[in-house]
Length: 104
Image 1 (tube, one colour):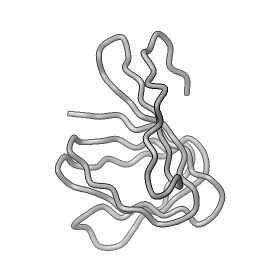
Image 2 (spheres, rainbow, N blue to C red; image 1 turned 120 degrees about the vertical axis):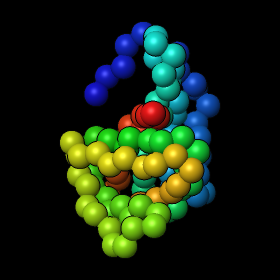
Image 3 (cartoon, rainbow, N blue to C red; image 1 turned 60 degrees about the vertical axis):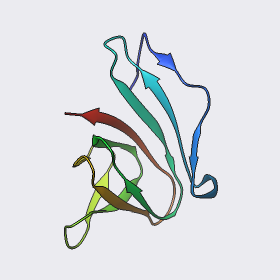
Image 4 (cartoon, rainbow, N blue to C red; image 1 turned 90 degrees about the vertical axis):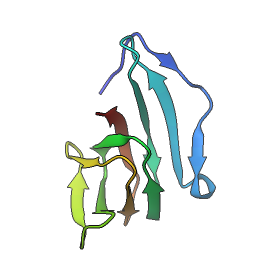
């Protein structure tokens, strides 16, 4: 996945002692995305806006807040998270890479 004609934020968003790292971009149409790396571990994120998480490399297990169990996702898969909600994501091994789009 490549982005052209974007404004990039060079300062990284660093979470969980550097085990989750992302960078943000703003596209020509004003929409924003983040993309980054998730190292092995289990992490919880709260959402303000609705999000679509696209897995671009590696794999993970995801549990959406309020829903029992988890689902597995690999490169080429995506999951959506409602606004004002959250999710837990677990990477068992390797590095999981993702692109997060903010959706309506």
